[in-house]
Length: 405
Image (tube, helix red, strand yellow):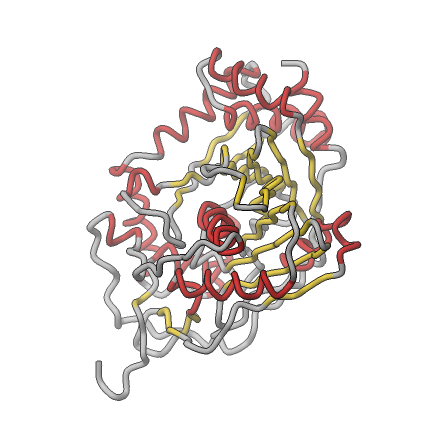
C-alpha cells in the first residue's frame, strides 16, 4: 500500500456495495430486539458491548469511498458502539424505539456501523441492536445478541479474524479495484418516507408447536406455513390482492452452503415467489411452494450465479439513482418474510434469560411493502411487522388463520 492509498481493510463485495448504495435512497438497515430477564446495570451492558466489539472486526469499521477505488471497509480504533439508555417505563412500548432506530440512516463514513439502545429496569431489559446491512444480516445480529449475553454472564469472548466474504467463500474473484469513479456521496442519506410502524405478535407455545408438527406432516416448514398464512391474510385485509399477485421475498441464511462460521457478515440470498389469486393454490400448496423456492435458491451453483449477476450490476458503476431503480424493480415486493427460525443457542446465560427475540425489523425501501421478522425462542414464535403503510389487522388475521389450519 502506497502513502497515497486509503487505509482499507478490503473492498466491499458486490452484495455489500449494493446494500450500501440502497441506503442512500431509503434506510434499509436491520434491527433486532432481545427481551432479557435478570438483574443488570447500564454499566454492565456498556462493558459487554465493548467486549462484543473487540470480538467482531466488522464492528469497528466505516465504509469509505475514493475516486478510483471500490467502496472499502476502514478500521477505526477509537469508535465505541453507541449506547442510548432509555428509561425503564418504555419497556411496554419497546416497538417505538425500533421505529426510531429504523428511521435513522447510517451516515457516510460513520463508525461503527452498529448502535445499541437499552431499555433498562433493575430486573429486566430490552436490548436493541441496529446494524448497517453491509456488515450484518439478521442471523449476524442474532449471533451478536448471543455473544453480548455471554459477555454479560462473565464469559470471555475470543477475538475473531476479519470474516471472509461471500465472494471469497464462493471462490469468485472480486471486482477490479479501479475502473469506477465513485459519485459524490458526501451528502448524508435523507429519509423522506416518514416514520415507520412496528407491530408485534407472540404466538403461544401450544400454537407454535402445532405449526411445527403440522408443517412436517404436510411436507413443508414453519416458514412455508407463515408464507401461506400471510398470502391469505393480505388477500383478506387488502382488497387489491384479490386481483393481483402477492410477491414474496424470503431472505435465506447461506452460511451452511458457504461454509461460513458464526462471524458477523453478509451471508444471505433472497429468493422470490409470486402467488396469483387466479391460480387456485390451496394453503398447503402455497406453503410447499414457498419451501421449494428456498431449496432451489440455496445451492452453491445458484449462489454463484446470483453473485456473478450482482458483480455485473456494479461493474459499470452503480450509482444512487441506478440503485433506486434496482430497488424498485429487482427488489420489488409486497411481503418480505425474514425467518430466523428457532434460536440456535440456549436461552440461559448465567443468571440472565433470553425471554424472547424480535426481528429482524427492516424496511425494504418499498413504502407499501410489509416486512415480517420471525424468530422462535423458548418454544414461542414471535412476529414483528414493519412497514410505512402497515395493512390493518394483518398480524391478527395471520394468527386466526394459523389457529385454524
